[in-house]
Image (cartoon, rainbow, N blue to C red; front, top):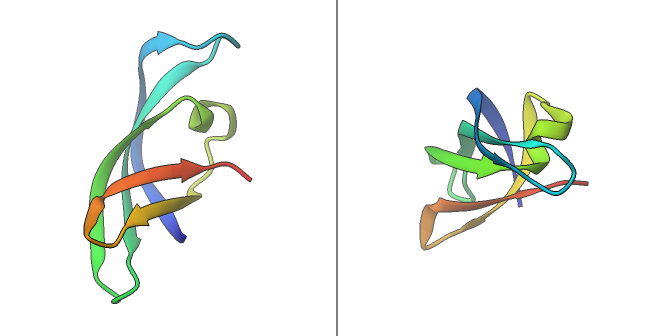
Length: 71
């Protein structure tokens, strides 16, 4: 688990069952080795909160593979 900073986001794509549009984000975070990684992420959950810092889970073998966690 890591804390990522949302650099940019825009609404795009379709709406989910609750009527929220998909957010397409560019995020930046530091992995367990202290290396900074910048990657893209799409999520319906972010549209509800739009926070600057989000919780993510990433794959240590492929740090650009991330999943957004909503607490």
